[in-house]
Image 1: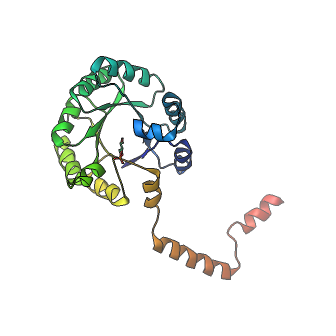
Image 2: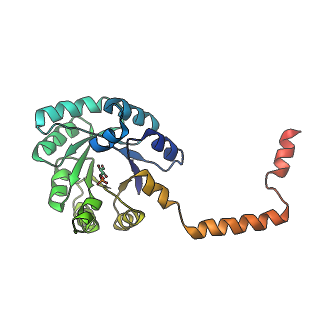
Image 3: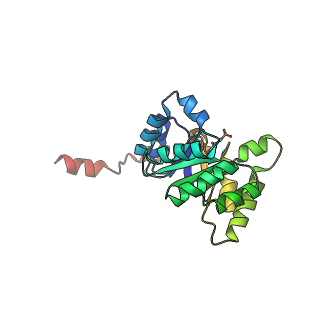
Length: 227
Ligand code: E4P
């Protein structure tokens, strides 16, 4: 499963990318507003930090303007994925950008029917929002299950399922169990994935016992290097 960071916070992206476990980044207009940065500038900077896909979202709602925006965004860097909304104009734009060789992320997907349309439009990624569905009493994971199952029926569907609106580690685990290719998550959620109290407890006990031995793994190497 690939991990994308869902943020426009460059410091967070740099920090977590240093783990080698970040495969891409997604942004949206709300995240760009939160960063307080210029949209094009911050996206260009993110593309320099992460080699995988970086989603940059169009803001027009009509096809001609959305297409012009998408073409401009696609020129920022080779790893840009143009994000378009799951609307008729968005899918028309997706189809054209796909034909031009751009990566396209179709966002704001809330139903399996919409996901089928995205795949037919040649989307590189479809972004079903699991957290927002859970918020209104529906099951975000049921939607992921449906989309994964449907896409598996058709070899011609090349679209990857990019699970979005992830709120907690169990969203990541459940999406992985279902075979979703990607999860995009806030930095806080990615940091939570590393944690377990028994890891901390076990490590503390190992280190306390190791100290009693008085040994050092690098002790001899350090001495040899100093000679
Ligand atoms: C990602 O592409 C989406 O924009 C994002 O995951 C939405 O998350 P939210 O529902 O927490 O705003």
